[in-house]
Image (cartoon, rainbow, N blue to C red):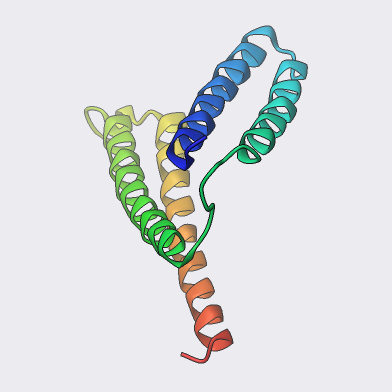
Length: 133
């Protein structure tokens, strides 16, 4: 199996996991989610054993690093805009009509995003110190 086909399989397993989680919420039973997670991990582990090409070399590791960083940046910007949209939507016609649960969710999302920035800076400082930069 090619590496890109493996990544498509991982994405399919992730969508399957979300569908099973949704079913678990609808049924108010966590057992289907637990079973699906265990089977998903097992399936990904077994699929990784059948990859024909080299899994990691310096080039693929560099591509993975750049892809992960760009994904983090784009996701952060998207979630930041979504949080602002939620807060503005919660304001409605003014402060007197503030939708409190929705607004609190937006502010919690902003706090989480700030925490991601702090985590990124702390890890950057740690690895700069560790590798002597």
